[in-house]
Length: 161
Ligand code: 4NP
Image 1 (tube, rainbow, N blue to C red):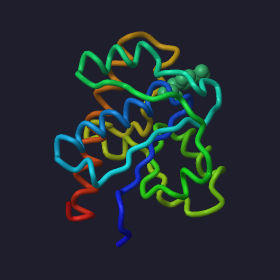
Image 2: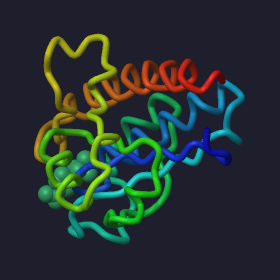
Image 3: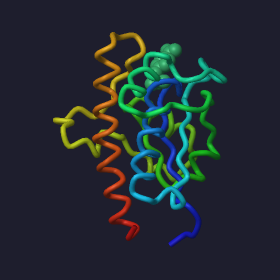
């Protein structure tokens, strides 16, 4: 097995709502498990629409109510980010198609976050909350938290952590 921290990157369209949230939520869960040194947790966007911007204030507000601080600035994903990662986690099917187009090969480790959502009921996507109302952000928070919890559980089992 490779040495060094496990590298996980969450990817959405703009890197201002879903993927920064997922990175911060996952980071908190990892910290609570005492495993911060074992992970490198990152996020990026497919598009360059919001490069350099902080997370969307609506997502920041929702996360803040749950005690999660969103950090960082939006950046666009590059092929190297993807090739370097042990786990590439896309928020929706469109993101996944776009990621696979960026990667010449090694696409098999690109997964959808909601594959781990115990309450997904067959819905594969974390919906894009950008054009919707406040309740959309809350729902996104809840599904991201559930999914990340199960993802971390699986990685811990896989890696014996
Ligand atoms: P995200 O949300 O992909 O979760 O960061 C979006 C942010 C911006 C846009 C779309 C989705 N946009 O079209 O500008």
